Image (cartoon, rainbow, N blue to C red; front, top):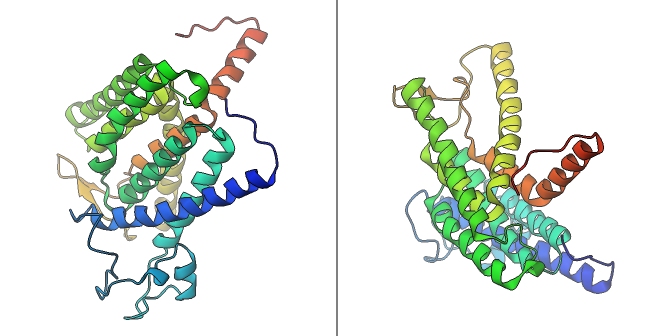
Length: 304
């Protein structure tokens, strides 16, 4: 549970700092989104306009403010700057603010702020080109495991959701294993395009941070949201008819095109959102559910 946060000038200050720092990290997330798919370094060279290649001055690179001040256009070539830049910055800012409000002045706050920023990158990149960056998932798996190991020795005062490396290991194994199995069944037995190995690594990473129960909760939330959106898209295209434009497509092993018209959607954003829902509310939701069962005279069968 987070430490209690009392209204105070210091609390207000940390709210402000959390949001501002989040927008700065969001600006870096935009750099990652631009450069990782192209195989470029996120360290250098300095930020440039992707259209005219002019170097961006520091005063034109202030999160949110510069985009508004420039009228959403490059100072030099006057071509539009994508809405994605301020959207990622604002979303990251609110993410950091929400983490601070939820976890307070604990070690968990910066950890989950970083995890939230990583999931924002995952979401936007998967929506853009159907890929999930290995630069996030592969390092994220051991980082989550190491944090659980350290938290085991330092106690629960850290505020982390997982304080046992065994729980983290089970989360990694279950998260990676269950999606790998589903993907194998989809591709080999059903002869349909699978979800992709990026989703497998993403859920394994989430398992390292939120444990095996978090993996199950994440899958439940992600499946519900994905089903709702997918059914809505099916209904929309059937109502509008065929021939509507689609986002970037990929092909499955049988050559079938993966498009919205084909009723295929990137699953990474739903896994990311499902993981965040469990991170913020999952354990409390489980306890509430178990309490209701016991109140009804039902003793739940649940592993510790």
